[in-house]
Picture (cartoon, rainbow, N blue to C red):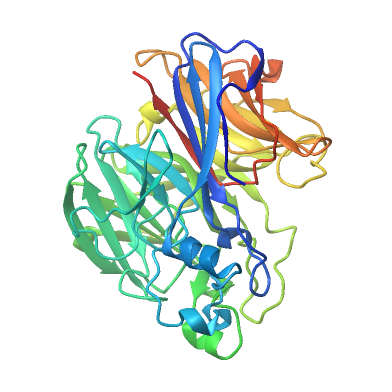
Length: 450
């Protein structure tokens, strides 16, 4: 359902210094799927909460990709995203442009909906109208991650792509896009094996590429097995590249099998690199190579810290647990992305799991004290990823607001919550209510009005 809500009902305080737009992206399939539905396979829908002078308006629109348009015309699903062998014969030779369903970022004066299998898809920031693929004057060749990193000091956007030379290959790409949206550098390298590489992380001095054993195999798929599957025997490989160098300078580390969908942050300290991650013992959502289901006890993430010694005589790295909460969707004050930082935010498990599934709490971890504070919503509410908004551009780290879209199963509707980021356990200072449900989505970002 697409809709416009020009003045939605608000409750409590909408801070006077909170002016801008919260954009969110997530899968919302038009039609019943071909075969089994996978959360990652829905059409991208962009949601926008426009906040100005204490009032909030909302609108949502599907990204009108080739996939969406063809299925809309056919009146049924045609694509099976994670199992192309189930695609409708009518679209066998169609060159698609992805689902645009994972993230939404503002960079280079453009609003870009992202999915890791294709280049960005441009949207109008006011109307959410679809403007088509954006390939940086045709300089971007191949797919681009849904998790680029924007350097808060230079304004550059750093990004990568996997399966860079075609479906299921070890080839990866690395790109640097200038503050004003010009693609300035592209390089390619071979990963140790073909893998699903959802996220990466950067510091002021380094780029970190995680190659983890959620492997891709077209040969396996042609024999009736899963395209992507868990192969722990291939272990984890982490590549660290100096930003001043090239892919020829990647230094590889090796560790136990694990999986990371999302990084919180990373920083460089002399010859040491640290990365804070939501780490799974085994990748969720995907089967083992023999088709059996993953172990649910191993398919939950905990917040951990990786430490790499760039001058050490070993390819090992240190892993330590920062908190034992089950968590995902880690975020930070983006003004400190890639730098030494103190405050992080997560969606996490509350005392009771939400009846709808997902996470029933938001967490704020203070890396200086090691303490975590939570806002526990109870079993009837489920939260999305938290997004931090600074109170001012020059506010101290962590001083600002935490925004999240919450689903209420008792009324089958969603609402936006606003928390004081320094006191989240006090609960929301403001809410804005929608008359419909926002499907469980992935990621969002804030665009300031200033």
